[in-house]
Image (cartoon, rainbow, N blue to C red; front, side, top):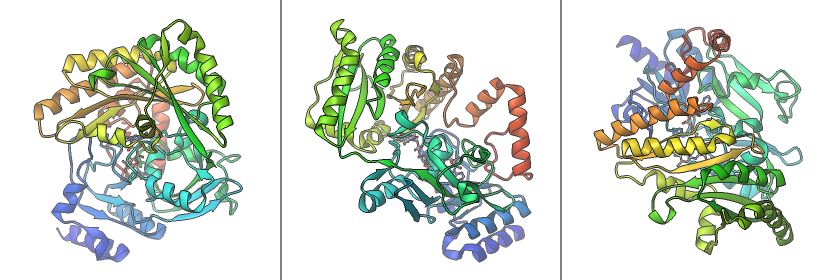
Length: 462
Ligand SMILES: Cc1cc2nc3c(=O)[nH]c(=O)nc-3n(C[C@H](O)[C@H](O)[C@H](O)COP(=O)(O)OP(=O)(O)OC[C@H]3O[C@@H](n4cnc5c(N)ncnc54)[C@H](O)[C@@H]3O)c2cc1C
């Protein structure tokens, strides 16, 4: 108790009383996320405003050997921000400044708590010709939280994972030192990670187990004036890899996503492949549209697929960024639970993954939303097994949990890797992983976090 009071007081000295809490109601909120991992309460929640404050919090936690869990928007759904071992939740939402936009070298530097909604609004107002790769997560998700989990967004088909767009980081190490990663470590310009050794890999994909990112440099891209969409529909999942291959060959689509769902029944048994077209003139859009139609002519002529007619309101829905229909779907069941296992798989494995989705949801009597995104020019894809569930119905939760387990097994079986995996899926991945790679992860963690204080429970390699 005395120790707890000392820690509380030390946190108050760092950030002020207003931004520290050990009140039950606050701890309850930070004990869970919208997914299905068991809740667990932290002992303290703290909201730093500056890197110096994060540095002091890390030093305090390291000194006292108390766990720290960095938290952005808490929307990654797979329990990655649940403080499995208690400790201090470091909520970064007050670090919400857009620090610099370099229009000519097309990058932005932001603080860790900047949300996707804030960055989008900021760019629209101040730099309308620039954009970033917006995920379809609710706008309160943070940009940093998204890159930490190797998120994907609206420019992913062109430029890779959102984490591939990082140009620099500022990181507070678990032992309290502050490091800059990328060109920003030797230059005032945060334009690129290359040509230096790529140290960003020590923090991306690690779920906050190796340090707290306090600043991020991110690539921006030209924002075209006009956006349009085409949706190609097929019944046979076996055709999907070929359709994707043909469309990506044209290099005309900005974003390619795939959707299938059993409800409403009018959508049952069809697979929709959405292709976003952007351009600075109607001529540019028409040219791109023609290239894509020509590429898919073979499937139209064979009557295996065709382009969908869309009303203006359907188009508007699909063109929204982020699409609010995704968020509405997440809340489709009473009780408000939603989780998706979105393994990253080779594109040619789409038919197998789709078959698994149907088998698993039939076995457990649950519904699904399948929303995939192509990553790179067909280099791989995120295949979403999305399961809404009713948190208020324990039996429904149990069935969905079992479905999630089977999904992780199936994802690994078909040669994929679960994305933003919850702790049990992390263990499955590590069991399958090359042993020397696992040992390398172990060594890196030990070097960076000798006292094992960072988001413990995650990527626990021993
Ligand atoms: C309806 C819906 C749609 C979605 N669509 C997409 C989509 O299209 N694309 C996509 O990529 N995702 C999507 N998501 C998943 C997720 O919401 C996003 O990836 C989101 O950007 C995660 O950000 P966050 O701020 O909520 O991260 P959090 O959940 O807060 O954190 C994620 C991880 O990063 C760590 N972390 C957070 N901040 C830091 C930091 N500063 N330093 C170190 N570690 C840190 C946390 O400890 C945790 O391990 C969707 C989610 C929902 C609910």
